[in-house]
Image 1 (cartoon, one colour):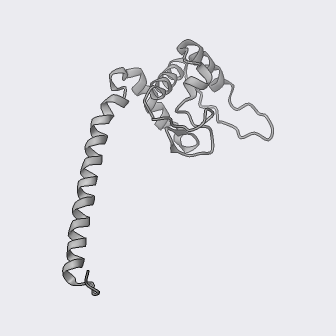
Image 2 (tube, rainbow, N blue to C red):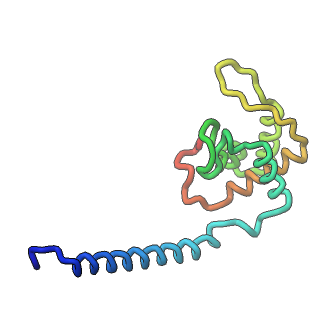
Image 3 (cartoon, rainbow, N blue to C red):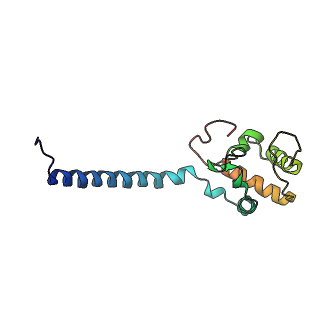
Length: 148
């Protein structure tokens, strides 16, 4: 090997490295695009779930909570709240969620307080459906701990 680093060598490293990383990027993109249909649950999307998502956005829930790692970390992660609080029982979760939301704020001193949004029973059910739907997305083990 030459003791000097020539322009030709630098050019070959630049083009070779650029081509390598471009192929790597394309390969990872193809892998991601082919894996998405296996991990999503688009077929379970209903009008009620969409209404729950709309309520989630209107009330800025992401301003305090995170969902699948996106959002603020002031309040608990809600990506797995259905498994944590409903134990995979939809009726139990909806009853728990409705009671929890109606009881806010609790007024317990020293605790952060969730505001009262004055949601109707229909809206609470839609929000619960959205959280149930989002918990069924394969998140590859996210969140890393049970309590979010």
